Length: 414
Ligand SMILES: [Fe+2]
Ligand SMILES: [Fe+2]
Image (cartoon, rainbow, N blue to C red; front, side, top):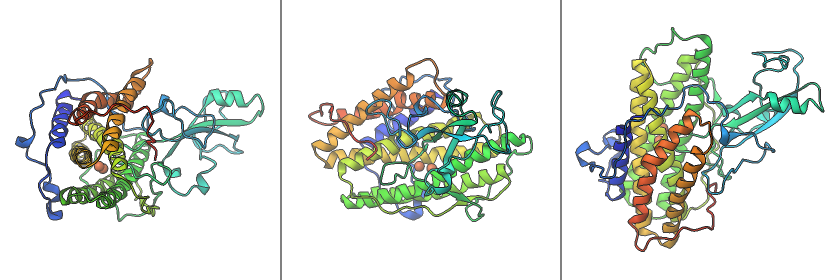
């Protein structure tokens, strides 16, 4: 990740914290980016070019934060105040009568290297389409002390990279995907022919998941609009939220088109169970905006920009760069929203933001603790350290008197 890119994002968000958005018309959504000359120089910048790798386009292996838990039903919470973990777990099934797909490594070659989760058939749609399942030799070995035909797997639900739409339990909710062509954006000629069938399948699966989350982000911005209206937000924030929702429609269309191009089959969203959530207070809005957008969309923007820099496909590079710019604008909006909640809110909002700042520090410690760190975690840590934390510190510092850190932990999944 280029330090200069992160420095630009940090300067933009710091500027937004103290800025007032000009009124935006829906027709001008795509022109909503402030001209570069309005972005203040960043006096705090210490960024240097970094060799931090970005997330791979292929599905990452299960990382420390998604290690199988004892119970598949319970999301892990490795440390207090960590941002919402994505659900993960493990399960065991009997060896299939006839193996389909790739076999697991010996001595477990009668097990498939991946399979469907037993709950997938009955799943309401928020998980199955996006669950990744990997064979687990260690769990299988242990289970075979009781059952000689067991095949055990770990599973995880990939955390969304952009703005999540959360169901009533706080779990990121997405629609199932289905065969349909009306969500396919027109793309240029992608360099698909030189890819192996395995690479194409991996990229198709990756972009199907990404498309489902981009599609859910539309609902997230619709929810944000309702939340902002319920607390009397100014029109410029509502207008920007509406524009961002339109961006997410386009992101979903692009991602579904990429999935179709790599997979050779049209794919689009099934219906999403997107009923409005409960009433949210200013502090709730500050908290969810901070997690899902100040953090989530900053990371999404940096990931897309990094992937754009690394690809040698010019068509893909342009698509990724455009989406990265949109996500950066969405993150900027998020910082403006949190700054607004601080201006009009009371002590509870100030305390929420101070706790969010502390949560960033705690997550940074957790992410960088230990020997192995995945590429996606490394990039997330870089963005937290170089972009999110300085902005969070600036937000808290702008308050008078400063809010003391609260040890009454926030329910970030609420
Ligand atoms: Fe997006
Ligand atoms: Fe976004």
